Length: 474
Image 1 (cartoon, one colour):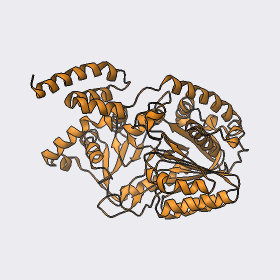
Image 2 (spheres, one colour):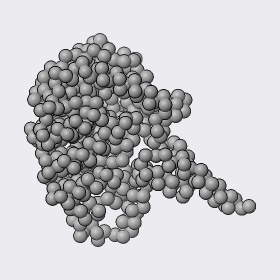
Image 3 (tube, helix red, strand yellow):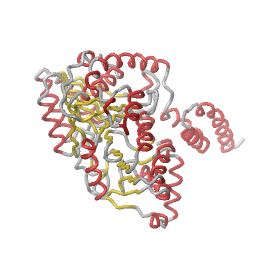
Image 4 (cartoon, helix red, strand yellow):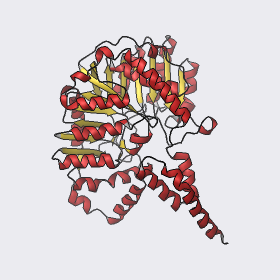
């Protein structure tokens, strides 16, 4: 039998064997995309599935999660009670707040102060100043820390804090921060900073974990009283990721008040999940002092959770909107539910605006994002291409009275695969600075006109459609 014929037959046999393996996946579109890849490139497709596909949590992982859930409930009862704001949330957001609390475990807390920042050099300076003022602990959880000027400046601040006797802990993703782990982490450990890899590789040495699962969170907690989170990684924002020569455009939040302790619990959970000992300050939270009047709700999400919380939250929030929805995201690869939610909102008469970068740091993801534009335009959604730097800000506002900022992109990876962390801000006063930044992004963007878009070259449209077929794998 010729070799080519043997390869073809073995490929079909492998594809048929893979059907029940892939069919268990809870998202049909993802399962079909993987099967398409396996049948098109049998042996390579099967290898990629083993390495990169999201798998159901193992029994050990589910047991570990159940233990964490029980401990989280006890920890939260110690500090959330006096600051619960759910009962006083605006009527239009009360159900949403209850949904997030039911699925994520964190209630909306009052008494917070929120400062929305552009995620530039000035923001890094504020972070370093707060680290230099730390007395008890500094905790960092980041997807990407680079050993560049920004990363080194933050590392030096941690070294100074550790020298003063401050407990300093760093969690950095094993893939996103691989250069940090090679160059900066050994020096930090020598200075007394505790550094751990998140989802470390090689994974086969411990337990099976797909390469595709990453911790994408960005979080700093200082003394349980100050927290930073948002879209910005610890790297030089002035370095352009694309050929347009402009810097990253980010949005960060500096948070003080009771909701900081929710962020502290998120760090503690990730620290323990990656082999660290429970934090003494997480087990006995410090008294949470009111710092303002903003109602904040912490929204963590990850593949081991019972629900895709950020995804479900966005679908619900878009459905609750009555006047206007604005989304900014560097990668726009919606699943069916989020895409339909946006389209139905526009058909109901809302003004729905989606801002994406003209060029991101991934040409393939750009093609996938562009494949959804025509359908959105046909339903009345306004789509804008931002071209003043790389728009990396992940923001959402609804009716000017609800805002969400964090690490999650408007794509399938953030919805279903990554560990993400977002903040919900309730009320017009809290949402106003986020909306102002969105308005700036809109003013720096070009609106895509439907008739012009439909006349773009046919070859490009075909490439986009082909890439879209594989978008559930991204």
